[in-house]
Structures are given as structure tokens and as C-alpha cells.
Picture 1 (cartoon, one colour):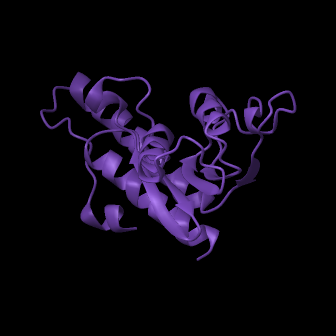
Picture 2: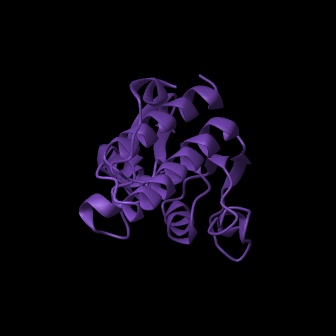
Length: 172
């Protein structure tokens, strides 16, 4: 399988997050061609600031392997990892990070800084960015557009405030 194939699996995870009202970010961890960890944002659902997609996938992969060392794995994530997730990637020794959309306001894998290649750490990761970038970016843009639209609707007295996502959008 190629990077696009695994990123599509991360996008499936992102759609799961969106379906429950979470920011649509998803991640998968692959070892020797097998997905061993999956995750999507659960921060709002669980009211836990550490429940990012990457953290959920890292936890699942570590449990699967019975080890915190994910040294021969690749993580695919739809949005550039934040400082917390980049730190967890370094600490879990994942050597390759593949992401879709950049995060100019919070990305710590190349945008604001790059913790993943910081030479002062004893472990670093190779970063591959822009895989399925348009699809990853569009998922986030549409999610936040719907949030803003619903916020305006609330101020105008409209009753239906749910984020509306059609089945076709979820399948794309």
C-alpha cells in the first residue's frame, strides 16, 4: 500500500470524529503494512485535552504491541501534529510521520516549529507532508464553516443547531 491508501484510512477516522461533533482529525499507525492503531478526536466527547487522534492511535498501537516503543511504525494523520502529539510521537519513537493538511496556528511538525526533527532530542522522525492535502483540508474547512453557519443561525433563532453532514460527504 502507498501513503495515499493509509491517509484514506486516517480520513475514515476523521469522519468518525465529525459524525459525533468532534473536529474531523484522524490517525492510523502502520507497522509492516498492517494497521495496528487507529484514532480520531474525542476531546469534546470525553472532555479530555489529551484525546487527540494521534494520542488515541499511539495508545492503541502501544497496547497492540505491548510496548511503548513504536520504532518500526509510520503514523498517518490528517492534520499536522500539535506540540503535544509531536512530543508523543518523539517519545514513542515513531520514525516516520505522514500528514495531510498543515496547521499554521498550531502545527509543530514544520509550521510553527518542528519538534520531530529537533536535533537536541535523541529521537527524530522523518516528516512527509501534503498527502491527500486537499481532502484533509476540505474536511476541516467544511466542519468549521458549518460551525460558523450554525452559530449565526443560533443568533437568528433557528432551532436546528447540529452540524449537518450528508452521507455523501462522509463517504468522500
